[in-house]
Length: 266
Image (cartoon, rainbow, N blue to C red):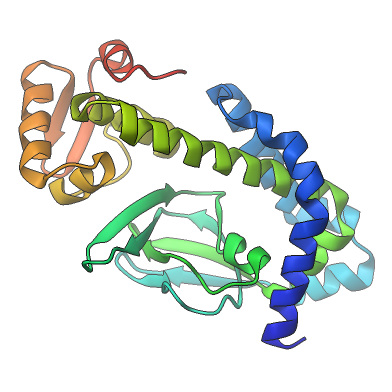
């Protein structure tokens, strides 16, 4: 199938799924526990064992033969903003950053993706070029699945299709919450919330530090403020014993106070 054919096929698949998607849109505002269930359902549905049961022998053989394992070093670009999607990337290990360059050339961080996240699917399903850049924040191992195979899986595997729709609805909810986050909260509240969310999303290392190393500029980018303001707030949080800081690494010391400060719904 040609690139144009794949894009049209993706658009048609999107339209067929819209009615079901609207039924799922109530995930906006869901609890963390519900979000984890959705992530787990997708991971199970996309796993080789589940696909082996759902697919015919011929379809499973094609899936298995086209699946590629790719590795990226920290700082490597997985795909560039504007590239034509050739497939989707399932993160087996590591963390990626999705960002988009603004009108003045400054990158805006959109989200972080971790183990068991799928990236690249939105642009593929919408039949457009990538609308963001994906960059490895740590050494990464991913499974790459070509576009035609991924779209075929969604067509013939109802369990995967439903899990995919739940995932899309959940991420729409995240986007809606981000608008509220930036529009209605103070910078101090936004920093408190983003630290809680990063810990929930990415987890912590054995010493309790959030599993990502961010520059002060990147933190400022996430909370929508100047770098100097972010530096000052981090220092204040440290003085108030809300967090511990070692270089670019941050550990939450008082989760309850941060949750209250950021008005975070757990």
